[in-house]
Length: 341
Image (cartoon, rainbow, N blue to C red; front, top):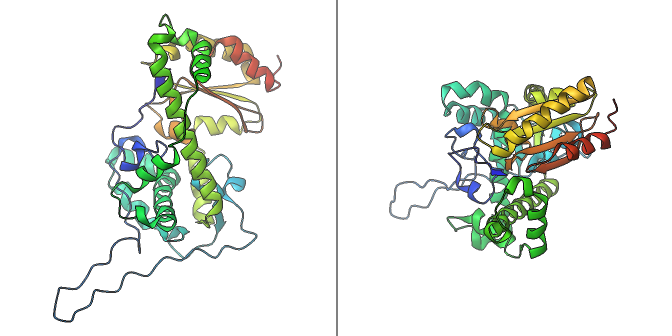
C-alpha cells in the first residue's frame, strides 16, 4: 500500500489531524473569526484602560425540529458538520457555533487567496473548505473551554490530540494479521524486515480513527447551525462528480482510488477492468486518480492507496478497504450487494 500525501501545503493542525487538509495545495490561511481574536488596545496613556474585547459569539438557538445536515444530505459530510442543524441564519452568515461564526464573505476571501486556476473548483466545493476551517475553529473553542491551561499553548490542538491518543497501542497479533493479509502487496519482504513499517502504519490509522471519531462525536454534541439555503445550493454543486452520480443511479457502485505511480494500483487495474466488463450495466465501476481529484479523495477519507469503497443501490457505503485486494475478494463484496448477472 502506498501512503497517500495529497497536499504539500498543510495547516499546522494537519500534522496531527490529516482530515484537516488544505485543498489542492492552495495556500489558504485560517479565517480570522469575529470575536475570537485578541482585542486591540488604544495607545498607552495615563490612566488609560484597554479597549473592551469584542463581544462573544453566542451558541445558536436551534429549533427542536431543525433537521441535521447528515440526515438531509447524507453524502455531503462524514465529519464535524454531519450533526449540524439546518436553519435560517442572518443574511450572509453560513455557520454559527459557540464562539465561531463564518460568513459568505469570509469564505470568498479565503478562496480569493488561492491560485486563480483553482478558484472555480474551490467555489464548487466551498462546503468542504468551510468544514475544514470550521472544524479547527470549533475544536479550538472546545479545548479552550474544557482545558483553559492549554489555551496559551502555541500548539494547543497538537497537544490535545497527543493526550487523546497517548494510550493507543498496536498488538503483535494486529501486526502479524496485516502481514498475512497483504502478502501480495508486501512482496518478498520478511516479517522482520517489514514489521516496523506495518506497526507505524497501523498506529497512524488508529490515531486518525481516534481523532475522527472524537470530532464526529463533538459535532453531534455541540450546537452548530448551518444556513439551510446556502447548504442546499452547495450540496447540488458538490454532488456534481463521478462518485455521487454513480451513487444516485439506483444500482450498486464500486469505487477505486489510486494513482499511476502506485504499484498495487497498477496490479489491480486488470481486476477493475474485468469487473466492469463482466457486470456491465448491473454495477457502476468508478476509478478516481487521487492526484487529479483531491477533493473526492479528501471527502472519502482516503489516507492510502489503493483505497476501495462499495456502495449499495441506495448509495449507502457498505464496505471500505485500504490496500491490495484480489479480484475474487472484490467479487465477493459485489455478490454481498446482491448483484446478479
